[in-house]
Length: 149
Image (cartoon, rainbow, N blue to C red; front, side):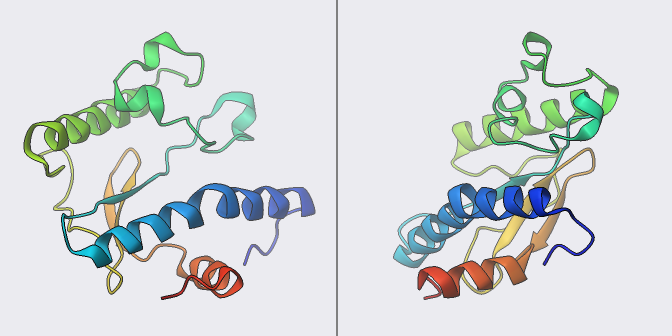
């Protein structure tokens, strides 16, 4: 799934997926199947340029962006792009807290998550909606874990 990457990069991708992404997808899929309330899935795609970009978008990098407090961390370069992502993410969380729906003017229309489309907000300088992003990896992990249903 990751041609042209080093063994270390493949290990990081596999452990990140197994520890975070796949568990989040399984939870979203199960919650959506209950049909009791809408579910929204996002993926934080903005990669920090610090350390020559080697970190990418590590786990929990999104936390200061949620609260638009990136100025209180040393996890960003404080670029206009980072500030835009922080403002977008904070507006999205505020909309969800106020209305129970995260849609707002700073993002494209974000459909709720279901097992058919798997609509996911890809949070980056230009936010976008993708259906079933990185589906090959998801299908592989769901086959491994037996959670494809």
